[in-house]
Length: 58
Image (tube, rainbow, N blue to C red; front, side, top):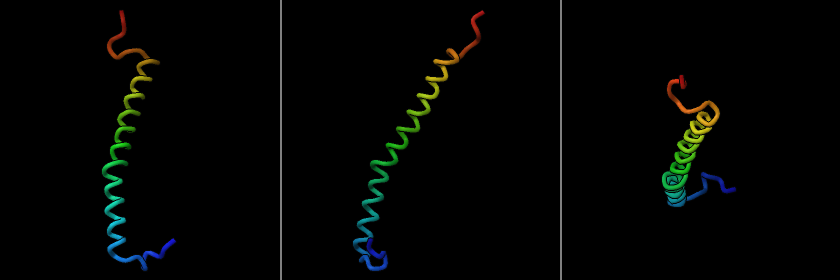
């Protein structure tokens, strides 16, 4: 692996910009989608096991 002290400033900056774009365009939306989907799945499974919310049928 290359020593970071030997990498030219321009190459390091390009790498950082590419990493930033990867995080913003790909990783953050994917993680957000997974968190929201996981929460929805958890609520759905809870309702499957415990029944719908509301007062008990009397």
